[in-house]
Image (cartoon, rainbow, N blue to C red):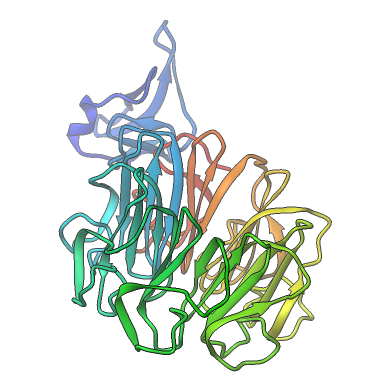
Length: 423
């Protein structure tokens, strides 16, 4: 299939030996590869062009950063950000609250750079934070609840603002309207909205400055994850703690009572990682087993079609696989197994499970044939992942350009961003 493209693209050439060749109609251009003797043949979708990527035989305009190897990715409600191996950070998608860090509020279907030297990024629903190489953190985007951490409340901050009064950090995590960060020495701080106790403090109702989790229990925190209205974390003693809202049992405490202070979850089990979604939570134990709890109306717990709509305690996800990492989104969950394969389950109305359709799944289903997934990020209706090669893939809803694939269309299978593979 060919597309009619602007005359400007006649002058462009695709990556390496791939060229834009005029077809029978001079205005119709195909993305072709030409041998030395001049014979040409079509190339696969996704092949990089100097002015875009090849899609259905044509070079579709898109703007990609020069770096093609990616280190980390983050997915918000309708935007995405990724850190390149060079330390550059790029964001794209919905930008009504300045969550792309570009200094404006214009939607972007292509990556825009965020100034700094970065090693990681975290996306809340409508705000973003970056972890700098020196251990500092900066946030930008929606700030009506103080989730940027600048010490002040504002409608939004369209450029990075340093988070105040924090030591060197190991990680940062973004929730719906709050943010948390773990220090290199094991402290944990949260800031932003606190109407449900998600900051780990009974008062105040919000805090635009970081509050340290300090309930009198001595802990060295390993990792934390911020959900919509709750937060969970693991410590170096392999204990799991959750606090905040609990309407669907997402704290895993056996009931639905909220708690503004950390409550131990699954006592007696060793835990290594936790992921907080909108109203559900998943965690991996020291035996590489996966457990989920909370809301299950869309199958986001992965417990099978006969499972109840809610589980209020950690419930093991049946599988012969061992699990390495897990992420929980709005009503979708994804996890990477120890063998490097990727599995997703839950809501799938925009193809966010990456399975080639829009049918929900009540148990983990393998995504594609790749076995080299390194990390995964789950947004509201889209998912992005990085493979060990440094390739970045996104899929699901693209109505606001959050996939960075140049067409604002749903993609029901992983498609490489600024790359040449579809898997």
